[in-house]
Length: 129
Image (cartoon, rainbow, N blue to C red; front, side, top):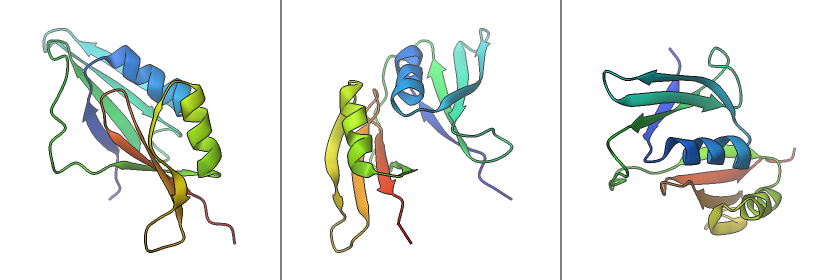
């Protein structure tokens, strides 16, 4: 068994695709409209679906936004340099909610950003050996 994808419901698919592709550097792997169901599925990721987990962005055509709920945590992305990753996000118009720095009670360097729908994304800096 393996994890295939994480699904997020998004209010504006084009805005979300721009964020995940342009700001976070993912690729659009596939996209399909389902007119009878009035929704679109778009899959984005850093590698092909056969090689790793990806994200499914679900856009229900008649829903502009969602309540994120209290149970959702975040998506974690490993980065070489969390400080540089935050700067890039800001330069591209993204929102950094916690600047890069050591995590509380630890030494791992982390940061948090938000996507256009308010979903939290954690950057975890790759440890040097």
